Length: 185
Image (cartoon, rainbow, N blue to C red; front, side, top):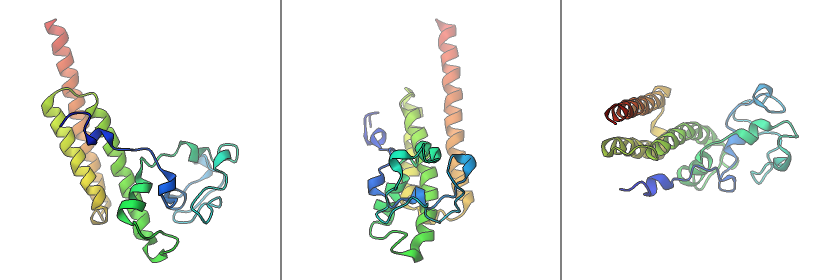
C-alpha cells in the first residue's frame, strides 16, 4: 500500500449538509468557550433550524459564536449520520438520541486519532513504522463502525493512550535516527 492509498484520502473535513447537526445538539457549550450563551448537552442550540441548519451561520462570530467557527468534528457528524444511523436522526427518533449522541462523541475522538495517524504517515519513511501506523489506523477505523460496542469510557481512553504511545515512540525513534544520521555524515 502506498502513501497515496485510501488511508490518506480519508476526508476529515466536516460536511454539515450530510449531518443532522450533531455538534449543535450533543455537546454542552458555554460563554467561556466562545458561545453567546451556556447550553446543556443534548439540547439543540437556539439557532438550530428545523432543517438542521444554523440560522446565524453567516454571522457566527459577530453573534457571539466564535466557538462554532473554530469547532471541528473531523467528519464525525456525517460519519455517524450517514454510516451508523443512516435512516434516523435525533429529532425524528428521540428514543435513539442518546445512542446517536454517544456515537458522535466516540467517533469524534476516533476520527481525531485517525487524523493524527494519517498526518504521521505523511512524515514517516521507515516501512516498519509505516506498517505500524497503518495497522493502528485500520484498527481505529474499524472501531468507528463498532462504536456502540465501545461502551466504557476506559475503552476509548485505552485506544487513545495506545495511539499516543505509538506516535510518541515513533517520534522518539525518528529523532534518534536523525541524530545517528547527522553523526555519520
